Length: 94
Image 1 (cartoon, one colour):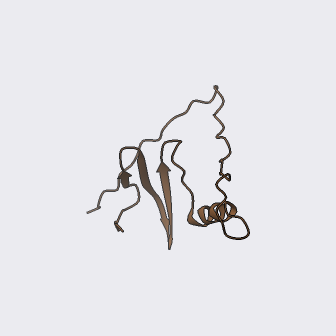
Image 2 (image 1 turned 45 degrees about the vertical axis):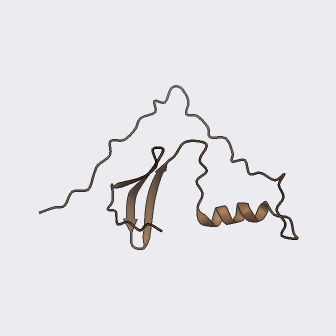
Image 3 (image 1 turned 120 degrees about the horizontal axis):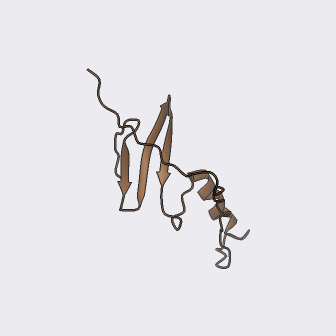
């Protein structure tokens, strides 16, 4: 396991396609922004475990016919422009 220290606004990359940004730190909670291609499924651990559990039958055997299909992502209306915020990087003060 790779363990990294990051400050708010700093980014880490996984391959060429996945970017993770530390958005906010509030006490013990960390808010992350994740940019990944549509074919990469990104879930919180508890959601992932629930999906895995739902894919198995009561006897605990995997059901190969079961598949999880996430709901479609709605596109913004054409009248609303899609913009990207400029990233601000943390700089030490002093």
